[in-house]
Length: 105
Image (cartoon, rainbow, N blue to C red):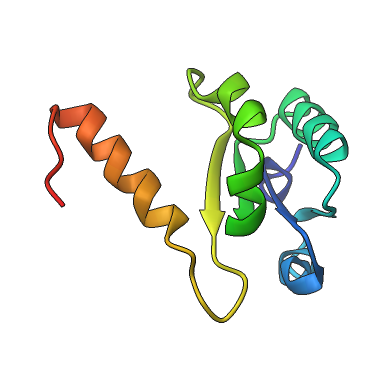
């Protein structure tokens, strides 16, 4: 697997296709089962980083639970619309709180 294939991107519309333009594996879908299978296959193939639209990230908590205690894949929510939903900063806040024991924000 080459370096670009260690990264993939998932979104609910074609806004995520910008990643495909630079050679990153992408999936455009709203189907939770399809997303679950895609993530499983990407991880099996060595994918380390998964960028995902914030909107989808909020919908897949059960899938995220499967991977949250593993170092990889890192599933990173990104805003793909004009306005961020704040999911990414919330994830950072929770990780910092977990790491140091209290909320600094």
